[in-house]
Length: 497
Image 1 (cartoon, rainbow, N blue to C red):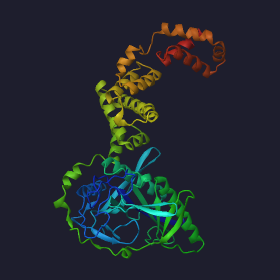
Image 2: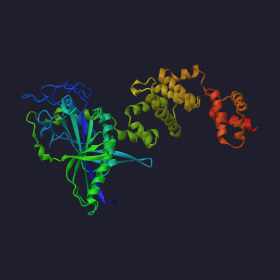
Image 3: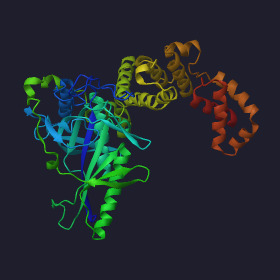
Image 4: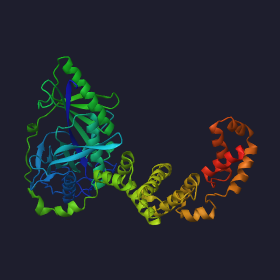
């Protein structure tokens, strides 16, 4: 048992993918590079203007709450969070305090240990909706403010402090990011600031045992723009606070930033308490009766199959290993393509049990290695693939029935990837069907044997690699058409008889 227990809570901001900003009609365009283009008197806080809440943004935060098993508030309201900073045009932020849209949910993170999935529920305290701040730009000793981002809808998710390791915190962020992608409510690109994570961490001595609810002094870490940064910053902070306690020093409640270059946290300011923000109800926006305003049943039905449900179903239906399932689940479009391939494959030949699992595994192997390599090489996404699931299934069927060799399969895949042609047509027009005719194989094998006396001598001395070399030469001469196993058998027969 370790001497200290870390207690970690996360606050995560997610920019929602909406047409307009949170309280005005300005475009919500995170890709806009020209400063101060998407602005108006409302998001610039001119005197006398009135905000109007974005219904699309509210629906998206409710859908996120439903996906994360939250209780949806019967009545939600907006509040003013008061603080002054140059990136905050009004001098306050419209947020939510005591009546957010979503409360008391959980996210189930997964891990693979010894090839088996293990799950853990992380409680979520709340998910509320607020507006983003402007962006500060520091150049040449001067600071500038770009208000394009001011007013963009933000969902802020706050966990309970029930995470106890850097790895768990990272997995929470990764799983949340994946769920956002599945729901298609945001792009959540951390490098672009579309998903921003803040960590609250404290460590406490274990003298009172695991049942103790005594926590250490809470420190907040900001500027975490990657999953790796979340994990590294927490590890560093655990070590820093542990070292302080070991020396008898007192950890102070503060906000610290993460220095990516130095790989350490640095002090920024003394941490504010909630009352420092002087929250009070937003007088320009009425409370919202959630069930009366939003079609909650429709929002629930619109939620797609989520990652954990897909993981368990893929394990059961396709007989894949947990790590193989994880690779598919992490790329929703690839997972959909894979399922369409299997559906087509089942249509070409009805199989079950181990035979079906072997066909599925063959399809997975070609998809996850050869097809993915072609996609990376050509900077091509699933949506622009020329090879349809039906064509991919035809190719796998030829391979499974040993009608073409693996080498031919790879070559045909590359051609169909480029042209979109039917694999069966390519195979037959180019005479690529695998040859099992021993007379034709023997003819080429004898030629290769005569051309490689040293390899023949090595084979007769018992060197296994010599046989593989000779077989490779025969396959090369046949342009991959011969059956590889039969080639080795025929070479052995010719050299031993």
